[in-house]
Image 1 (cartoon, rainbow, N blue to C red):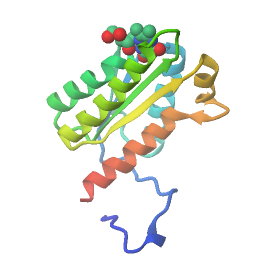
Image 2 (cartoon, rainbow, N blue to C red):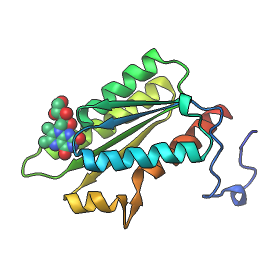
Image 3 (cartoon, rainbow, N blue to C red):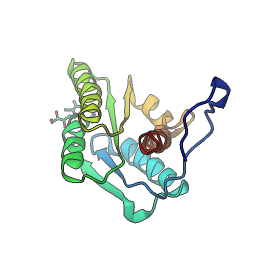
Length: 163
Ligand code: DLZ
């Protein structure tokens, strides 16, 4: 069960833990819904693929990426048995500084919520220059960052469970 490394050669990028014992929340932003819907589908399907029970996946929507931090905080405060929260969003660069404020706020906010609760809170937010870059990362030529966020959640939940 324990996954402590004995030496550096034990390390493997390919080991993805089974999620049968985990309860995981996915919070997804409604802004840029076509993109975030694809991220959500990728994350959900990946959790199922690695053994997480449907009834142990909590799916919630929030208006925009800025709200992801607050939602993660509420979930972790009210649902003590969660093993991880996956935050999914897509912020696309516009003509104003809004992009920078949202990206900074959500990155720092998610980090702080995870530290506060000692629980993995995963940053699955695309921050792109344009819509095409987002499409490419939401099931396009650069894969689906929702899948990657789910795998990170499984690895970190396993890390936490084995300490
Ligand atoms: C207002 C706004 C803008 C301009 N752009 C985005 C975006 O690209 N992606 C995103 O997820 N949300 C955006 N929002 C909404 C904010 O995240 C937030 O919902 C509002 O500022 C209300 O707090």
